[in-house]
Length: 82
Image 1: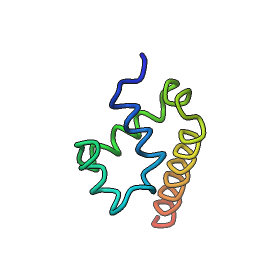
Image 2 (image 1 turned 45 degrees about the vertical axis):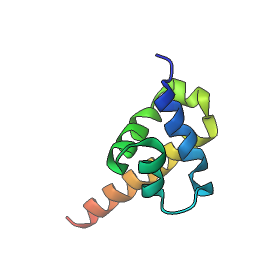
Image 3 (image 1 turned 90 degrees about the vertical axis):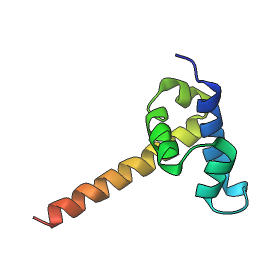
């Protein structure tokens, strides 16, 4: 399934958000009309698609790597609590 305009906008925003003035959450609301929670939910699903990988492979690889590191850290903390 090809990327929608919203999908491309989310990926493009994530790639360029540091260039925007202000807090990221404010920019998400202002530019995309999404709550930050919904934005991150959509982004998380989006980076697992081949279409997103084709659109911006470096961004998707970086975001997957960050997600995997957070997951590993969370699992490690959970194991330490036992």
